Length: 355
Image (cartoon, rainbow, N blue to C red; front, side, top):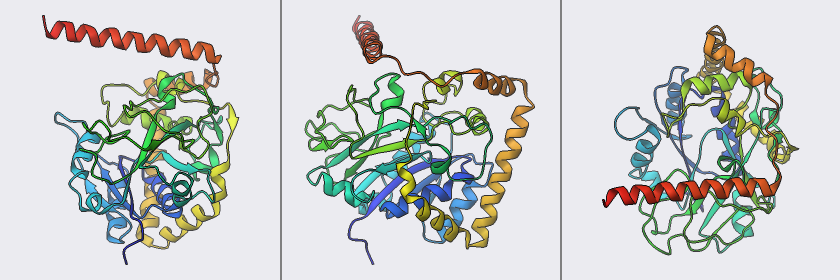
C-alpha cells in the first residue's frame, strides 16, 4: 500500500558499513518512507550491505563510480534525478550518512515539522555541528548516543558550520537535485521556504543563511562530521565526495569540533533506534556484513596509525583544544571580510572574461 505521504531521502556512501543501520533505523522511525543510496569505491562491504538491504525492500541501492569530469556526489544526483522513486516522491530530502534530521516540534517526527509550518514548500534545515566530545577510539555504538556536545544556538563563523540541507515538496518548481538545495532558474521557485525556526527565507538562497539569532527552534540537522579521532583518520584517508581536491585535515577538524553545549534531544528516539538496528540484524547476512564493516574499520585505523602522516594527524588532533566560540561581533566581521573577498574574486573573473 502506498504511504499517505512519500518522503524520499537521497544519499551517497563510501566505507560507511558500521553506521548504515543506525542512520536507516532513525530516519525510518521519524517518517522517511523511501531511500536511494549511491555507493562508490567501497572496501568495507558497504555496497554488499546496501545490496542486501535493497533485496529486503528497505532501500534502492545504485552503484556509482568515481572519475570523470563530475565528482561522485554530483554524478549520483544526476542519476537520482532520473530514478522512479524521485518521480513518485511527495517530499525529497538530500542528506549524508553522518547527518540526522533532529526535529524538536511535537514528537520529533517529520509530520510534526510539517504541521508546525503547514504552508511551507521547503525547509532549509541548518546544520548543528557535533564535536568529538573527547572520544578518541572508534566504538560500534550509536553516534546519537556517543556524541552529545555541539555548537551553540547562535553561530555564523566558521561559515561551513552553519550550512543547511533541504527537505522540500515536489511541486514542479525545480530543474534538478542539488547538494544543499534543488537547482532552479525560476525566480519564485523558493517562495514559501522556511528555516529551522519556521521563518520565511529569501527567495535567492545561497548555501549559507547567516543569522546571529538562535536557529534551531523547529529542527536541526545533527551533523556528526568528525566522530571519534580514530574514525576521523578513516574519513581523512577517504577524502570529500564533492570536493575531491580539498583535504580533510586539521582545518576541517577545527571548523567542526564544537563541544560548547550539551544537546541530547535526539536521544528521545534512542529506544526506537536500537530496536530498528536489532530488527535489521535479525537478518543473518546483515548482521555478518555489519560486523565485517566494523572489523574492516578497526583494521584500517590500525594501518593508518602505523603510517607517519596519519600518526602525526592523530597526535596533533589530540594536542588541539576544542574549537572556541569567538565573540559574535568578531564572527560577523570575519564573515563580512570573506564575502568581500569572494565578491572581489568574482568581479575579477568577470573583468578577465570580457577583456
